[in-house]
Amino acid sequence: MSIELSQETMKKLHALKNIVDSFTDKKMKGISQYAEVILDIGINSILNNLFRENELLQDTMKTMFERNPDFVGKFIADMIKLGKLKPEEKWRSDIT
Image 1 (tube, rainbow, N blue to C red):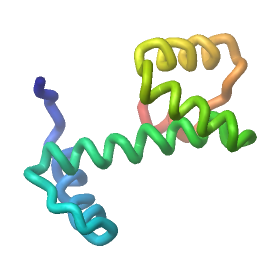
Image 2: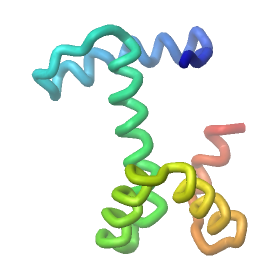
Image 3: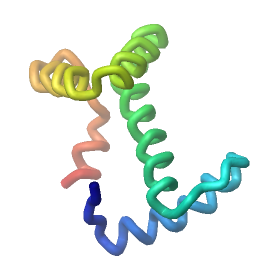
C-alpha cells in the first residue's frame, strides 16, 4: 500500500523524524516506519481529545479502535455528526 503526500507534508515528516529519534531507542527502517509512529501518535491524540472529559472512556475507545478501527471510526464519525461529540474547532480550520 502506498499513499501520496505533498512536498510540504514530507518536509514536516522528515523534520519530525528527529523528534521521534530523541524519545526512542528503537532503530527505524526508513521514513515509512517514522510515518507509522507519527500517525499512531496523531490517532491517539485525536481520540484523547474527543474523550478528554473521561480518562476511562479514552482508554476504552483507544482499545476498541485498536481492535476494530472501521467500526469505531464510523461510530465516532456518526456521534460527531449527531452532535454527541465535539472535536476542537481548530481541527476544522486546520483541514480547510
